[in-house]
Amino acid sequence: MEYKMETQNLNVWYGDNHVLKDVDLKILENQVTALIGPSGCGKSTLLMTLNRLIELIDGARVEGRVLLDGEDIYNHDVDVTDIRRRVGMVFQKPNPLPKSIYENVAYGPRIHGVRDKKKLDRIVKKSLQAVGLWDEVHDRLNDSAFNLSVGQQQRLCIARALAVKPEVLLMDEPCSALDPTTTRRIEEVIRALKTTITVVIVTHNMHQAMRVSDYTAFLYMGRIAEYGETEQVFENPKNPLTRDYINGRFG
Image (cartoon, rainbow, N blue to C red):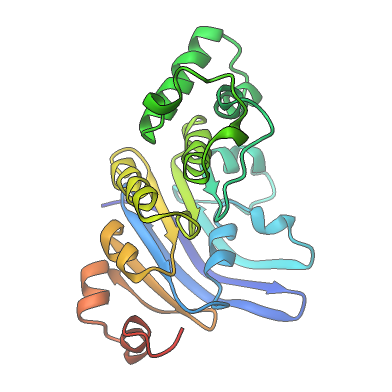
């Protein structure tokens, strides 16, 4: 299998706080990689370095390399907008735009130059179908996105990210505020997505990591303490810290 993204000697600071330390991580193409670890270990920070959202945080400083298809996304001549299209992001809390359901999904393609109404219609339908939302909203696409339930809003945000055809989708605890039924739906979406894109998910839910991911990286105090196939990491961890965390001895 090919590596879609890779970090090399990645270090991140917030002011004087050294958050990520010498992180080397290889993310395989068309696989789901879970990032697990206790609060404050750097999981969300690592996620934000993968599409340069980290640069929007005051005082953040990045050293090292982040490769996408072998090219460093932090090179000066790289188009940041293009990187954030290719590497999409879904956040912990749903953040729909104050627009209609249709316009939420069409927003990204419009920004990137799609003007044809029929093409936009196809993109919206396909994106909503990909997250299992089309049948629920196809007859009210002009309604406000805020009329949707929280779970529907989160699936809408995933659809919005998919509408610009990302190659990688980053997900920062996308199910933390959702009920079990909606969580199961989103996990089904994640498993289906890996047929076409690469997914990296941060989760505190160990069972979720086991259910949806192919590979798991355990972060501890800003470093990768263990990384490997999910089954191996959970069933036969090499690092005693990993075993203690998985078994709930700290977190």
